[in-house]
Length: 326
Image (cartoon, rainbow, N blue to C red; front, side, top):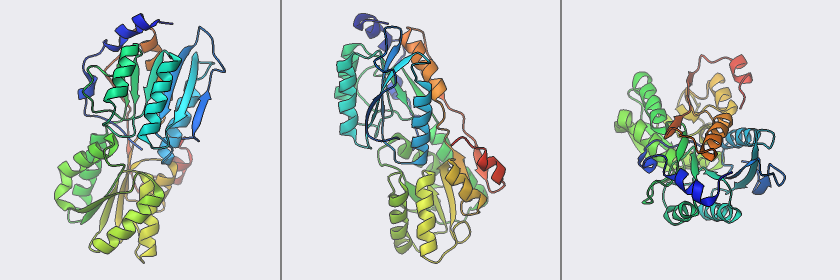
């Protein structure tokens, strides 16, 4: 294990990673859990703050992280669910500093508002690994590395499908949590391709319930809508409920393009209620474990690790959906 002075040098190993534009997508109950049962000197002590449990994607991501950062694999994990509140996450990060963990990893709820706590972590000499989403901060070299999906590319991929398959569609954009990396970058990628087709936007906060509510209002405000681009599957599933309640046929009267690729979302694709799904793979706990180990050991790590995503249309089969790990 590294002392504070040795760890302080690790934080500056990588250049200004905060300038990265890629950021990410959309667990468990609240509170903290220690995976290491107190751990030992041979274990890497990790403080991980998950942003919440807003979606099936987030739950799958949390499960993957917990399954990888185990005592058996060499980690003493303290896990905190921030319940989608930045103040909870900031408190967790400060608690990790007080516990003098070896590495801090977290998925930030939104991009801004982290300057003070990131400076405190840097001053403590504890290296930070960002997971899934990134931050916008004035702190120099605030984190060592980032792992996640290319959200902007996901938005671009969705937009390219719309341009090729529904070039005359009137699009309502169902956005994720405003200010989050996933929302900002997916919107940017999508609008760069088919922004002139977007007639309205609203946030569903990455949840099924709020997605339904947002689409109910959208169908009143924009009755001409023929396609919905949802920033995640869960909001898209809520949109299905709203569309059906309005007497329309999802996937036909109003097409649905979503991001995530969780089993429920792909099932909607098989059922012809979704038209296209861009994957945001949540199962990368093993890659995260490798990164954290390298960081704790003072090894050089890449500035970014992009998790490979796929995309699916209505040709997907039931067997493929049933075989999904999440």
